[in-house]
Structure formats: structure tokens, C-alpha cells
Length: 126
Image (tube, rainbow, N blue to C red; front, side):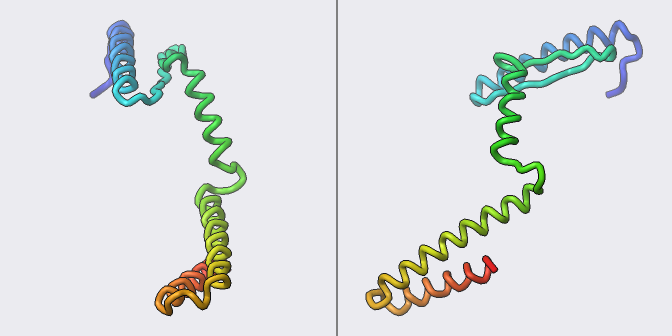
């Protein structure tokens, strides 16, 4: 593909392609049940958008997702690792409680497994 030379032809192509893109987005949304939106800017910087019922609804969803899932001060990977560490620490506490409650009643193989998992979790958390 290359840039259409004629400004008039470019404007017509923009309009047709925009409408086609809108149809495809609506079709995708209908088939999947997902929200689909897009923004296009003309060469004159005039925005055109599509989103059911509005592009603003999609922006609100994006903002809510960011606020729920991303800490702007901390990279996502570090944030995820800290959450994982908290989960492992919670598992370790549960395993320690199980070990103390059923120490005598658990077959040796199961107890060994529980102990190994607890030790692995302890190593991960330190």
C-alpha cells in the first residue's frame, strides 16, 4: 500500500475505509460480546471514533482497569511478584498449621511432601 496522491481520493478512501472498519468492529463485537472501539484522525486532525455506545465508555473501562490492576509507581512485573510472594506466604502459613494439627495422623510420604512444599515456600519468601 502507498499513500493516495489525490487529496480528494484520499478523503473518499478515508470515509469508505472508516465505514468498513466500523462495520467490522461492530461485527466483531456482536460475535464475541466484547466492546470494540477505535479513533481515527483525518489529516486535518479531526477525530472520528467508534464505540458501542460511545468511545467514552471504552475509555472509562480502560481507566478503571488501570486503577484496579496497575500501580503507576511500580512496574507490573514487580507488582505481580509481590502478589505472588504474598500468596506463597499465605500457603506456607496454611501448611504450617496443617503440619501442627495433623502431624501424627498423616502417612510419612504425605507429611514429607507437605514439609518439602513448606520449605520451598519458605525459601521463595526469603
